[in-house]
Length: 115
Image 1 (cartoon, rainbow, N blue to C red):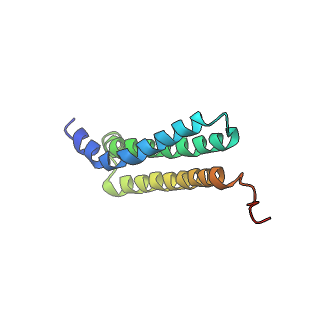
Image 2: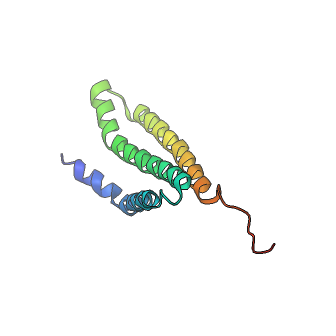
Image 3: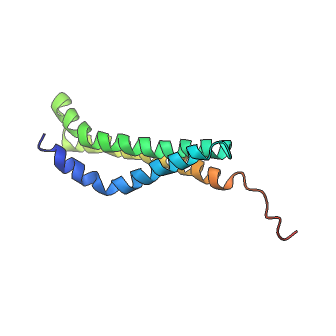
C-alpha cells in the first residue's frame, strides 16, 4: 500500500488531459443529433485515448510487481514488457488521433465563399 501513493502522484499531471478527453466525449455526445457521424468518430477516438491511457497507467503500476513476484522476472525482462506496452499504446494513440482528425476535417465541404 505504501507504493500506491507515489504511483498516484506520478500520474497526477495527466488528470487535466484525461478530463479534457472526458469533456470532449460529453460535447460529442451532446452534439450527436446535429452531427451523428462526426460525433461517433470523435467519441471513438476520445474513448480510445482515454482507455489506452488508463490501461497503461494501471499496467505500469501493477505489472512490474506482478511479473516479479509471480514469475520472478528481472528488471530487464520487465522493462522489455513495459516497452511493448508503450508500443501498443503509441499505436492506439495514432489510431485515435487519426479518428479525431477525420472527425474534424473528414466531412468538410469546400469553401464556397470564393465561388
